[in-house]
Image (cartoon, rainbow over all chains, first blue to last red; front, side, top):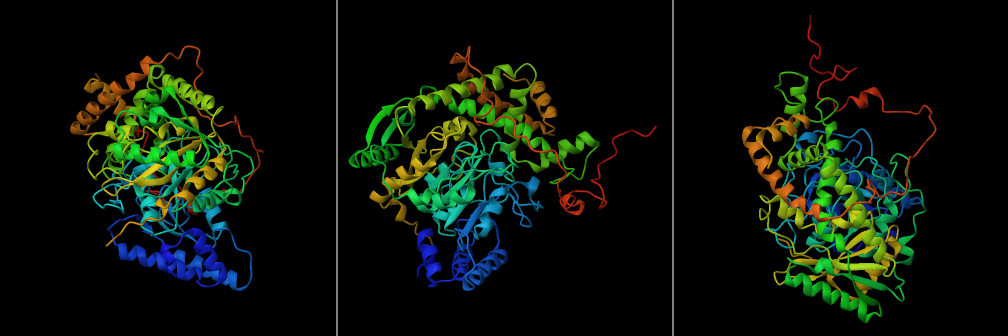
Length: 487
Length: 96
């Protein structure tokens, strides 16, 4: 059996039937990771020993006929801003380079309870701030389809790991597109659930009103299966919503009759790459051919989303990152004059350029004399953005468009132009401001052979509709079966 | 345009010790970003309530009861400086 070429469904079936063991599966992925060396460089920590121990335990339980969780024996790449007890969690920052969490994030516990195998901690932009993973202070991650390109970000390591078949599943976090954009760049499925669907307890906070944890897989089935495991109420995150988690995988294969698809005209605006435009329009035609009712819709406040997002996200980040004081954990400077200077020197040494830039913007936007003009204003525009979505979801079930205006950009291409980098998130950012779920699914390739993603969005807590609609398209195409040729 | 003094004030509030070079660079980039976010001035927000977050929950209350917390040793396990009992910080109060 070609283990690493298999989908999550095939792997589960093979392990259940006994044709391969969980140890075989984990070892096959660990072998791929060591064969990769640093070519893709998806992981900051490879959990070889821990992963094999869990896989061994899964095999033991199976041999004794004990009940097993829904992800039994499946390796998962976990973004390194999610706490794993006893396993380094760095946020790809010098600040937390030596941080070993004394507790598990809620989603880590959920994975372990489902008998999943945490195979490693995946690279990211420092503190999840970025769209290319280039802001990692610890490592470069490359796009498996073209190693001169970025994998996107900030969950670039998780996306690249799944695309390069270094893990069948990945967990990421999405604050402004950090799951969907790298999924698009790497040609995999990336799902950001509704705000409140997954507990963020143990996710190292970036922008708390926007952050949400979600899943990566090579196909929609895998992403749905992983969401079932991650989702659910947890009273340690006060924004975690107490409502039942549907059995997404049970309904996935049922096509939606009378599906209404809205095409967001603003997402096909200025700056969209011609190949992206063509591929996504062709993908929308697939829905037409399946009998869906396709109509053009407008989200008139889209042009304000990026500005709104950066003010809100940076304001929240400046507050969240105030905790890095060199006292309780994290980096402490060696040289300082007094207590205040110790804070300032430790933070200056521990944080990278983008993190400092965002803290500065946030502190400024919240400062006396400016907070009404910037922070408060952005919160009001945020409501208008949400209202746009509420209005269109009265008439359509899902929205369709490109995940990103372009395919993956080259490493170094945008690194000196933060504003241009921010604008690459134009299609994904509104979903975080509105708190709605979204998914990026493979929908073609550019003339240079780089993946193109289609984004689908749905109303709050309509993940089931979203996933079924995504699966309808996936069944008709084979983009998700394409694999990058490496080495 | 932000003056160098403005940017230094923000850095002080943010507890970030930035070099002159960094201050100049951040100042330039913040100017660019602030120019860009000025696009929000076009939007009429009169009578619009601010939306701090979208969750359909207000306060999440729980019973006020004693529960287990991290043992001291684990709480201190990542401390940059500790004596095994406390987090150690530089002296704050001047000696008389």
